[in-house]
Length: 224
Ligand SMILES: Nc1ncnc2c1ncn2[C@@H]1O[C@H](COP(=O)(O)OP(=O)(O)OP(=O)(O)O)[C@@H](O)[C@H]1O
Ligand SMILES: [Mg+2]
Image (cartoon, rainbow, N blue to C red; front, top):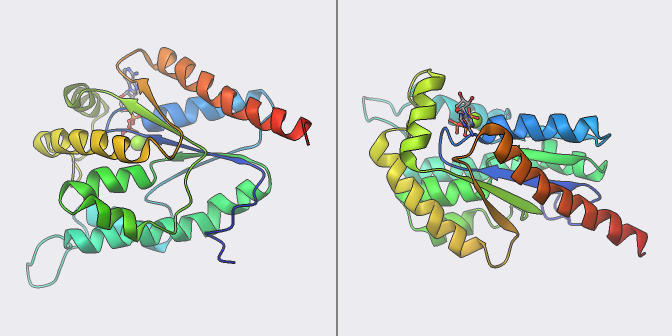
C-alpha cells in the first residue's frame, strides 16, 4: 500500500490553519512546548515542507523562481500541483514515520490551505481532487482572525511580502477559507478558534481541543 494511503498509525496528526499572520506558527510552537512538558513526543512541521518540492514552492512564493523570458510567476495550476506534490512527499518523509512512532504531529498548514489559497483562483473541486492522496488530519484547528488583524500582525512581524499577502488577496482567501471549512467541516474534525484573542487565550482554546483528541486516544486504547 502506498505510504501516503496507509491508515494504521499510532500517533495523532494535528494541523493548524489560518490567514498569513493569524498566528499558526506561534501556536504550533506553544502547543509543542506544553505537550512536550507533559511528556508527549511531538514533531512540529510545516507546509510548504523542507523537501525538494517545498523548497521550490518557497522560491516561487518569494519571487525567486519565475517563468523564463519575463513570463512572470508560475501558473496557478502549476503552483497547486506543486503544493499537492510537496504534500505527498511531506507525508512520506516526515508525517507518517512520526505517526508510526506514536508521536503527536503538529503541522503548520495542510490541505485546507490549498483549498483556500489555490482555490481562490482555481476550482476548489479540482484542488481537492489533486489532494486526494493526502490523508485527512485527526484534528484541524483554524485560527480565525479578520484579514485586517492578520495584516496588522504581519506588519508588526516585519519581513518581505509574499505572493498571496496583499490585502485584497487576503480578503479573497479569507472567503475561500470559509468555503473550504464548509466543504471539509462535515467529514473531518475541524475546529475554529477565536484567533483575535491574546496568544495565551488562543493556546488555551487550542489545548482544550488537543487534549480532547489525545484523551480519546487513550480511552480508545484502554477499551481494547
Ligand atoms: N493572538 C495573538 N495576538 C497578538 N499577536 C499575535 C497573536 N498571535 C501571533 N501574534 C503575532 O503576530 C505575528 C504573526 O504570527 P505568526 O508568525 O505566528 O503567524 P502565522 O499565521 O504563522 O503567519 P504566516 O502564515 O505568515 O506564517 C507574530 O509577530 C506573532 O508574535
Ligand atoms: Mg507562519
